[in-house]
Length: 486
Image (cartoon, rainbow, N blue to C red; front, side, top):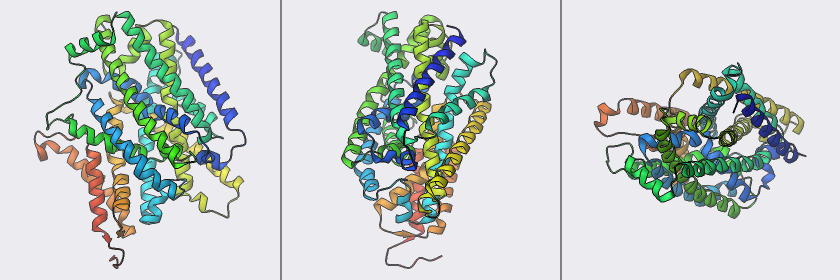
């Protein structure tokens, strides 16, 4: 199928999203944009959050990584289940009890304004880097397969996609995203299933025979038992739990949708439902990864990693499958990008500008400022995606997990300290503690061979970062009835 034909399907898909956005953004206001008027349907939120949680990186990188790490990623997924339980029964009751719009307001009431601003700033940094890394991967695929042949530069492709996202999130925000995410998740999962069924039929395999063939090639191994390996199952499960707690439970984008549900009990249903569906969906992605490697070997394809799935879907499968792949890929892209831009806009307006505390600002002024911030966030995304294009890392899922380890660690330490202790801190020193912890982690990561020999540190760097932050906060804290020293 020609690039022009594929482009026409992309445009048609966008027009469908625009129609949904137009319908759902009627009579929207700042409350709609930030938190969906706390009237979202928990089932829609749960289903739509699958797309947000997975993103284009999962769609491409997880199957591509099977050739190198087998099904090891499923160890992290097991940890996800533990993390979702903590979110549902520890964090959500806290957020609902305090009636939060921004979850970082908790840090203000518990630890102080500097801790609050620091936590929000780390979220803004982390979500900007993580979301633009996800966006870059999908934009690059669209550029290479469609727009490069039409003479469109990479930065123009990125700008066009960001403009498309802005158009349908500009007014409705979270209220719109709850519905568009549901639509996009449906298309993404449809693409996943279609590709699995096509390869099984083409290779004349059943599920059982496919697993057997993967096992023969060493693709289906789940548990790794070498304690020194970064894939050691206890490390991976523990890391998965903390990745979920931080990247979902302490992330404004994910919680913004979750707490848009009216009742705590329904919000908890949302999280538990999401966790169970995620386990099944990611296993299917890993299964697809094994199939892609088997099918690629049969077709004589040399592509590996992030390039494997796009190469096979667009060059070695029928046109209809190619179209479904492109639509599914875009459906994986938009939920992670639109939600991130909206959440960053919300966090900056509420946490940094203090919009909700500005009684001297009219609703009209607040809306104008919010829209300007929305545009600036999109411009920042454009800059970072172009930077990732220059760097051109071969595996974006590795980049995203590394970014999360450095930037979510301080959030993990701040929230854990606030929840587990009743101690008060010297709030002025909190930013220094939260900066020092990831710096120490960077040094440990860079010199881990010299420090630990054969022991490899992977995703558990996030836990170390959080622990260092926690210890640092403990050192600058006192019991509630004691006087702080400065």
